[in-house]
Length: 342
Image (cartoon, rainbow, N blue to C red; front, side, top):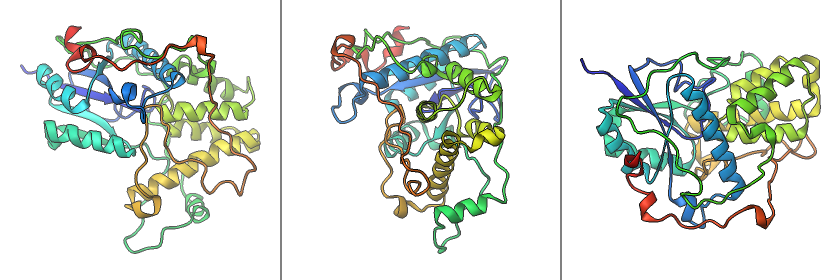
């Protein structure tokens, strides 16, 4: 009997809680989770990631792999162009479906289009970005509502709850002949940051969940620094907007403090942009942003300065020169069909 196998292509959705790639869809008998490191992130001066961005990404990937392993799954990290790596991987596994989130970045859209052309669009299951509210699209020919008018519409709606609130107990097993594992940062000549901060994000999804639990119990008070850290976690996908909004809603009177209001307004502003984009109002938003794997490039803060004096920015991390090694362009030996060596 043929065993159905799906490939889960992870990008800026590095979590298990409230992730419809792992819940809310029919499970296959086996499942391979893959993350693709694109060479341009290492050797293209215009797109190369900074040491702190690599540290954030690597911590998130390691934490995700740990959670996958304890639930019967695993993670494969490949190096190369997705349209060259994913089709042969699916062929090798006999996989029927590639499951992926349809993310907003112009580069992300182009990458997904190339992969779909290579394997066939009918074999790609595109899941929309997680919405906060079930809103109908803006009618054709109608004027795009302002942000205050958008908030007025939301006042009559209940937010969508997270589809899951805890880590899954089990996941579909790894394919019998499926490659697995991560290369080391040293083997890819990536910049190494010896002391990454903040501690909240050091353990990926686990670290973010610890912070959310502390905030929910009232053990700590939300600060603007926490808001910046949560924005980084949201951008890379180690927490969902629905998780953060549910926490804002459950916080009661304490949720009226400035940090909570900033967090709530940031989430609503991103929902406003998502609603416009899904309604086809690209002319208002301009060309899709180029978004790197840590979420840099997303539109933020526009239109909210009137309500608050100074927006909390995601913290910047600058390490002394002694703490990092300079990035070196990867050699051909670490690109292409890298995963075949595992």
